[in-house]
Image 1 (cartoon, helix red, strand yellow):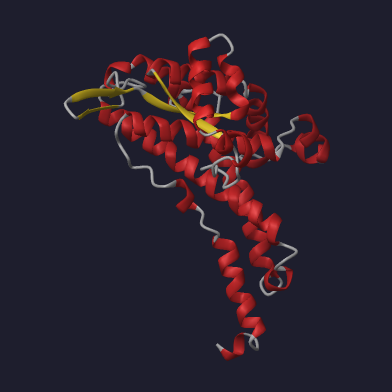
Image 2: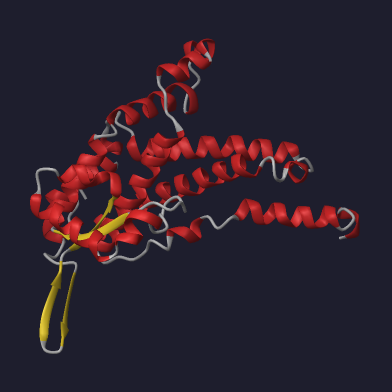
Length: 280
């Protein structure tokens, strides 16, 4: 296979699957860090039984999270870096012949039905379609079908386990890819800051960065909301591509992090409550 040239659906699937491993790692470690922040005061005694372990687990989760995101969004170029998320959209467009026109086709009561590609649109993303009246109409129709779900309670967000309203609408493959392309272009500043953090803090030790300390973080800020957006985007895009290619190797994302930290801390709490570890 020539460099960066994809000749078959199988090769495309293999590359998307490899990218998914980093997206899954980012998802897992993001949620692990958030659980540490949320559970520290509730389970401080339990964490105090193994303080070094939890301290290093927390630090390690940060490094793994940042490095996983950096591999997905690295913009430094080079032959080995052509298949990152931004380029992935471009390559899929070039290989649109590997995709069928419809994501599904079926017969019902003698009638044939074709379904385009289902694209998840968050409530704050409607503005991406301001110049697309037909798509805006589809979004409005879906919201009207179940306004309570969309406006008040939302559905469970598959990436963060937080209630966050969205709809799924039918779009052509090209429309879906354009949507994902506009989203990633809207995160250019965050991606550039991620690259600086990777190069000068996580992948290499930069003397200037060490001496600057907190000033460096202020120079290239990356807040938790930015990290969450980058992580969710990678999960959403790769899930969409796997479904579009009918290769369902991606498991239910919620099962990737299933309250693992709290479950282990509950066991320690139980041991302490009933007389300490010496009785077990």
